[in-house]
Length: 93
Image (cartoon, rainbow, N blue to C red):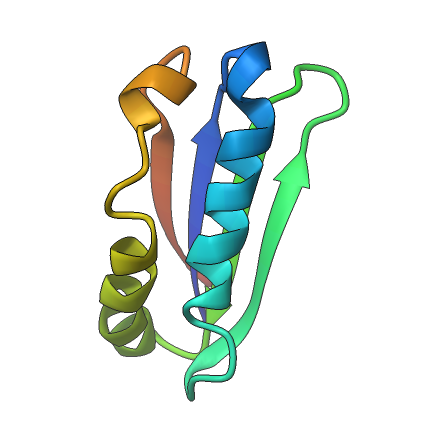
C-alpha cells in the first residue's frame, strides 16, 4: 500500500473553496484502478484540512496523480492557504 497525504491550513474565508478543491482532486481519481480510497478530513482542534489518498502501489499513485492535479490546476492556492501545504508520501512498513 502507498499513501499520499497533504495537510492544508486555509485562511478561514477560503476554507470552503479549498474543501471544494480537495473534493475535486479526489473525484478525479475515483473509479480508476489502483486507487483504494480518497478522503478529505478536518482536524477538529486546528481546523487544518487533510487530504488522504490510499493506493495499491506507488506506481498507481504516480499514474493517477496527474489526473487529480489537472482537476485543480487553476485553483488559487496562493490566496486560499495561510502557509504552504505539507505533502507526505507514505509507504507501509
